[in-house]
Amino acid sequence: MLYAQGSKTKSEIQMKLKYYTIILLGVLVISCQEKTRKLPYYKSSDFVPVWETPQNKSFHKIRPFHLVDQEGKSFSEKELDGKITVVDFFFTSCPGICPKMTNSMSKIQAEFKNDDQIQLVSHSVTPDKDSVPVLAAYAKKKNIQYNKWKLLTGDKEEIYNLGRKFYFIEEDLGENNDSFIFLHTENFVLIDKTRIIRGIYNSLDPSSMQSLVEDIKVLEKE
Image (cartoon, rainbow, N blue to C red; front, side, top):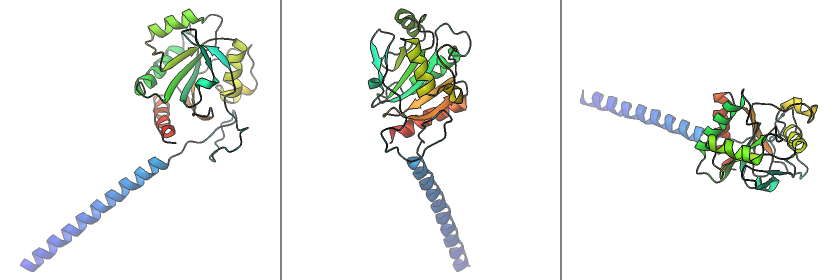
């Protein structure tokens, strides 16, 4: 009886060891997958993913530009270099989707408020109405932190060209529209530290916004 009881105890211990080994291996596999997860690169408005790291300097990236932020300071493509940037296009008098977009961007601001690698950039699609003072008042009303989130105004043609031809903000629609057709979209675009597009997200969809947060964290590990 003593032998049988001892054998049973030993068997139970072995089973438990196997169980915990399997759990540990599972955790390690998941951890490795998270560490090795990589975001694709995008170079066209159809958003076909490119998985190889671009070696060609001609790979699509946000072109040089010159706009002005809510404090009247110059903002160019140089401010994108070395930063992970979330980009959208809005206007302050929008009664429809823009307040929801601003709310989504505010959550991103809160999530990364102490992270200097991350910045948010919103371009006005009615720059003739959204002057620097108007943007400043909007920023104050919406509790937009200047060191984290820039609101941009400037030349309308340049803003629309950037949105459609370089950020592909309207996806495949962007290839055919010009500055005379109103630019309005709920999409957010994720740009890496080299000004290359790494993702596009629906700002009105909570699950898409969660994906954006997770993807930002992946980019930070590159």
